[in-house]
Image 1: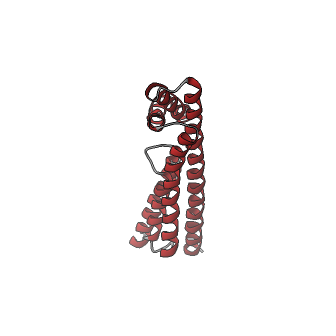
Image 2: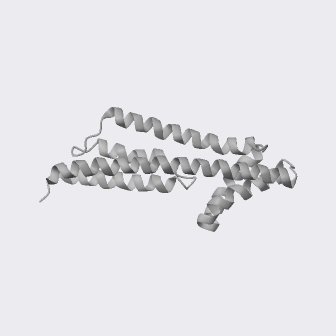
Image 3: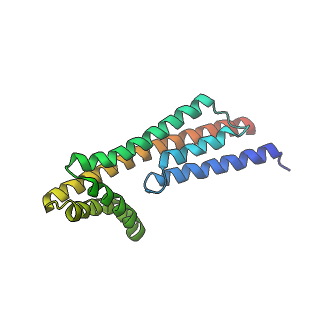
Amino acid sequence: MLNTTYTMDLFLIGLGGFFILLGIIGSFLPVLPGPPTTWVGFLMLYFTSSVTLSLSFLLLTLGIALLVFSIDTILSVFGVKKMGGGRAGIIGSTIGLIIGLLFFGPLGILLGPFVGAFLGELLFNKSDMGDAFKSASGALLGFLSGVFLKFLVSLVFAYYFVVKVWESMADILL
């Protein structure tokens, strides 16, 4: 029979792994904040007795997760603004992302922000087609930059999660 400490540790490691995967997926989805969700995986490891994580590591990675989350938000707005778009383009980009994801899956993640920003600029800011296209291109570029950054950080977090678990499990098993 397994020791209750190891049983709880296995549960927390499994739950942490779930949050790591969820965070990686959240790098692409607008409803899940990727790096902060991935960071919760580290938080689960922190509460195990088998895996050693320092409080400074936990706080550093939390800071990185929150910084990336903030930068992602700024990148989307910056992309639209830099290309001459306005508030309607930003809101349209967000709505387009959600609708695109719901109805068109992975393709909608790419097309949704572009089409949403384009329509938002065209309909509400009364932009001409060229300006609306330019704003929509900025929205797409900002979105893709944010996704790349979130995905990269989430993968690095996943790597450290696996390394920490592997080191601890090797100590236990050997």
